[in-house]
Structures are given as structure tokens and as C-alpha cells.
Image (cartoon, rainbow, N blue to C red):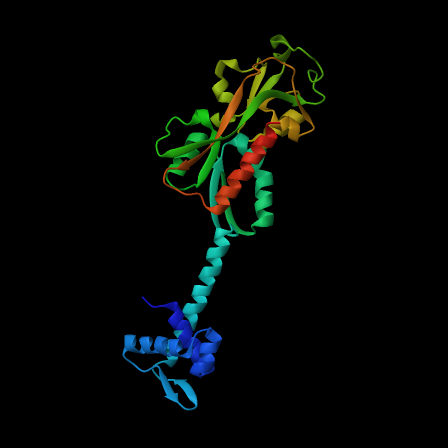
Length: 295
């Protein structure tokens, strides 16, 4: 295998044209440079430089090799720069996923921060059901996914790490007829439609028969749309309490539906796979967003 240091010696000697000055430029001794060039000549069986009192001149055989060596050294320098930038998370590719609830709470601020601080990074953020994201992690299509723990029926090949909890609440707009009332009963809620998502990651599906009473049902996987619907109507929204703290237009109802109901949020990654630096940063940002939304 060719030693890049010897190629650099070759190029510098060709540029300087003198062994002593080239050795000084390379911060090595002149005998060490002479041995390096001699090793290359022994390797190819041809003379690379004509030695004379005037200096060292590349032979006809050597000239095209010098041009090739320059390109190889430039590629090596670029590779080292890219390697260091990748280790810092500045470039490369990041693919991850999250369920709709986690995505709605964390993706916008997290992606904004990555865009500001890692503009050279290619980011692919996927939103979907937990069981689908888990399979994508298993197939190495995603580095990790952040989902509700209770949707993972098959955990083979996955490492599961808890990143937080989300408490569910019944949210309404601030001007809703029930917003200011205390000690609400089931019959008070029955006159209003309930907005919810269909993906199990949101935690609602696991509630089953324990869903709050409602007069009708609006099912939509987009949390952005659900927020708009609830903010502009009398519909109720079964969602994370975090959406109330992040949106001044929504408040939780004082209804004892199930005060202990919460969704455990976990990060899943494949066994035997090490997360890249950008994946570790994105994961920490998502965890911070979940913690903020839980307050």
C-alpha cells in the first residue's frame, strides 16, 4: 500500500528541486528524505529524479506520477477535512423518525436548530406509526426512532431507552364553554365532539374504552390540523398537556378523566449499531423537547 507521506515527499521535492530545501520544508532531515525517495524508486524500479549539483529534476517517467500524486494528496486532505467535519456532526446524513405526537412537540424547534448549526447536514425526518418506524430502524433505514413504548409488539433486534413521558389531557380553546368550569362531569363533555389521532403513537388508541365522553369524533393524523380545528371550534382534543403550554390558545379541561394516564416515550435503535454524532445530538434535542412539553 502506498504511503501518502512518501507521495508528499515526492511532490515537495519536485516543487522545490533541492533535497536540502525540500527536507527543511517537510520538517525532516535530508537523509530521511533521500531514503524516502530511494524507497519509491526501489518500489517502481525506475529513477524518479535526476540528481546533479544544481538540484533534483523529475525524470520523464516521474512527471505524470507527480500530477497523479497531487490529486491523491488533495483527495486525502479533503477526506481528512470531511472526516473531522463528520465527527463534529457538521456534514453527513441523518435519518430518524418519530410518532405524530413526538414530531408535533419536538420536530420544528429541533430541525430549526440543526438548520442553524449544521447547515451542511442532510436531514431526513420521518413521521409514522411506531411499529412501522421500529421496522425501519431494524432494517437500518433509520438510525433511531422516538415513539410510544406500548406500540412495540416486536422488540427483537432493538435497544429501547426511555426518554420521557407525556401526560394526556382533554384540551379546548380558551373561549370554549367548558374552559372556565371546574369539576366537570362526563355529561358536561358529552355535548362536544372529540378530536383525536388514529396512530397508536399518540397514546389515545391505548386508552380504548377509557376515552373521555364525547358527542362526536374527529379523527386525523395531523396534529397541525387538529390544533387548528380545536382552536377554531368547540371540539375537544385528547392530546399531550404540552400542547397547552406551547399554545396560549389551548387549555386543559378540569375533568377527572384519568389523572394518571400518561404515555411512556422511548428511543429505539438497532442492536449493534452506534449512533452517529448528529443522531446523538438530534436525539438529545428531541428528549429536551419532550421534557419541555411535559411541563
